Length: 105
Image 1 (cartoon, rainbow, N blue to C red):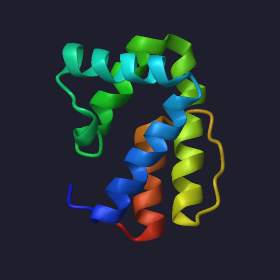
Image 2: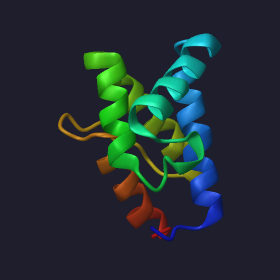
Image 3: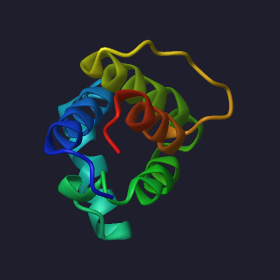
Image 4: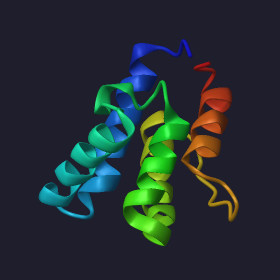
């Protein structure tokens, strides 16, 4: 994927924000677990969003859905987009929609 650096930065900051709701220690533990179990570093999330989604679901179970929505809501806010929660969407869907809507991909 070849999106602008600004979009990637906004996405990483939104991920940080969304995971921070769980606390700094838990956020870092999730990043560590995702890297160890899925080989995905924080800086690579934008490239492998599907892997991030699977890793988050593995780590948080049903708790991943509200965290993903929080991440998406924050990303949309950063991009100046209106956020609408969708029942069947994952972080992958939200980010792809944000890219199309913001013209970042």
